[in-house]
Length: 100
Image (tube, helix red, strand yellow):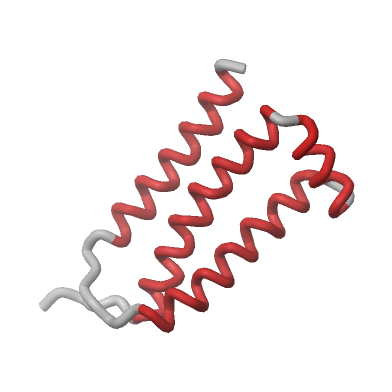
């Protein structure tokens, strides 16, 4: 019998995928646009602090919303999707700094 993920695991798992990819996009935008980086630095003392807060808020808010929309299921796609999102995020940031 396949194990079943709870609706919280599915909701926050999807939120993690979105937060990981959003973090990568934000790094690229911030590094390519000095005005965004300066705004984030001004907002919360350092641009990395502002980025961390933004990504954490995306994760928590989306996780809360998606948990209410989800239902328990085997969701065999969740773990591979988290791994793929992490790998894509890392590769995107590596590529940004290699080709900058």
